[in-house]
Amino acid sequence: MRSLKTRQLTAAAMFAALAVILSIYPFTFYLPDSSRITFREIPIFLCSFSLGPVMGGLCAFIADLVGTFISSSGNAWNPLFALNAVLTGVLPGLLFRYVFKNQNRTLSTALSIIPVNILVSLFLTTLWLHVLRFDGGVPLWAHLLLRLPLVAAMTAIQILVVRLLYPVVQRLIQGGYQR
Image 1 (cartoon, rainbow, N blue to C red):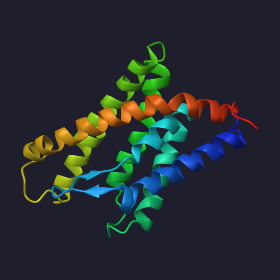
Image 2: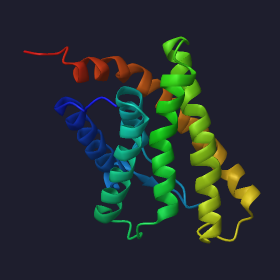
Image 3: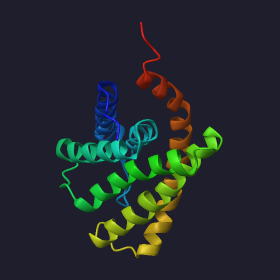
Image 4: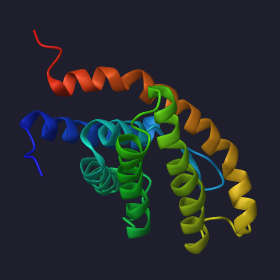
């Protein structure tokens, strides 16, 4: 394993900080069915794509932990949702770097984000909300159907933003934009 450079650690810390900022009140919109609109996954995806799945998972875990403690929502830290965060950090990096590395950049971005959002944002998050009884008594299948349009819309936004920002982030991490 190669050693991490200061630039990579700094970038991972900045991605985690940005994810925390995007997860707090003014940037997060809560919906009645225990869903929320947030853009906190975008820096985590960028970290995972740029720095690899291990740094992506670590970035996501730290962002989840810190974000929970400074959030005004009043929710306690939960290991089930921390697992979701780690999977959101690890899986896209694995898919992007190892499975879809020879694909067109837009296609590999989409194919790396879509399965993660289906598994984590749609299924696991809905399951944890159901298990913890934050679903308002709605059956699991109905809650899945209620969350599906939100997850689909957020996935499209995430693919677009990550695809646009990834080349800039890569260049910054590699030191391409220097004065």
